[in-house]
Image (cartoon, rainbow, N blue to C red; front, side, top):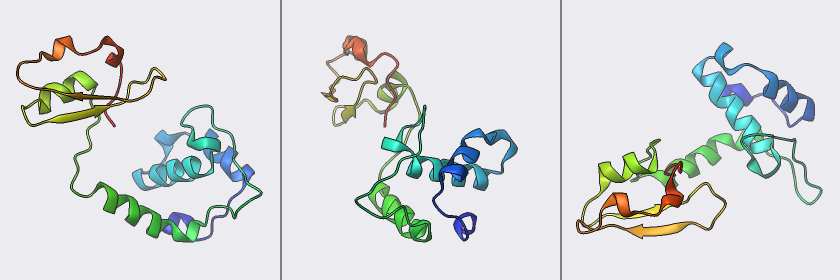
Length: 134
């Protein structure tokens, strides 16, 4: 939270953050940089970011970050977050009672896949190749 105590929403700061090398930052600084860029980028894009503004509402209030992070933490409480390929995640968690919700990165609508021991993971749609579990 201290990273944002005197920060404000600025196109110039956004551009400076974009060109800052993450390897030169501490873990906290890197997380703060990511947060700043994501919340100021048009459409929340991860790559090809441009500074996003609106004329219909206020700019992001950097003093309310703790509240935003707390809300995100509450939504994720009781869940597992994995950074695995879809196949590794499916193999790790595939059980008769498991329900998977995976969104392919192909631009297609999300698909819901329910597995059972009788269905082989290798028979899953090939559109999941390269997808990440979110």
